[in-house]
Amino acid sequence: MNSEPKAIPFWSEPEIASSISGTLLHLEQHGVLAYPTETVYGFGGAIDSASVSTLVALKRRPETKPFLLLISDSSMIDRLGLQLSNAASMLAARFWPGPLTLVLAGGERRVAARLRGPEGGIAVRWTPHPGLQRLISAMGDPLTSTSANLPGTPPAMNAATVVRDWSQSISRGTLRVLDGGTLTASAPSTVVDCTGRSPRVIRPGAISAEALRAAVPSLVGDR
Image (tube, rainbow, N blue to C red; front, side, top):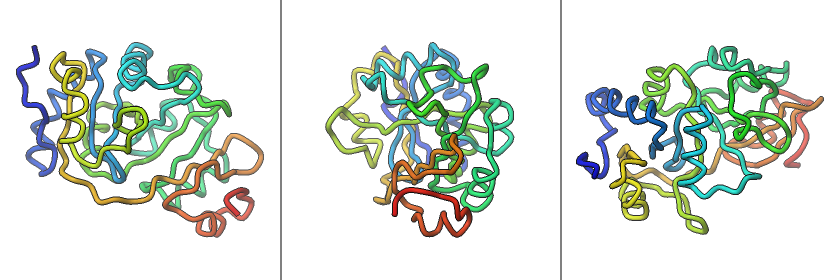
């Protein structure tokens, strides 16, 4: 039985700092983490196959739906062996950190195959959330990410919802919840596939196609 609080405070700088060692241990044991992002609460973990399998089982994620990766700095792109095209580099320079997810080619040697999407790429976002940036930097690797919710329900906007819906996973020690308070409703990140000849919007979101096209005129999709 897990003796920790149902949710670990993750709001102030001291709370974030004190949570990191226990969170890193949980992730090393292939556990799943619930955490606040700049949009909604997410589920995630380490990028190795065992951790991804734990996340798939908890989330009950369909095999055809991949997870994205959250990074804390651009050097993680190189370490993963991902490829930034010229267009992807321009979009990243303009909109990262921020609500832009780029689908990138490469990463075959470092990223679990289950994280690769149907277009063959890996979805990556540089999160602007300061607590997550600190945690991911301490990990030294990206954090996988998907919305924290039961199938058919809206993504969680606070830790209390996660604790209510996933209490058994918390009690078993599979899930560790970081409580960053109640989030303000916002649009999801815009997703751009950068694996082809021209970057293509595959999910409209917080950043408009007009703004993206101002940085990369060859962008297609989303009008």
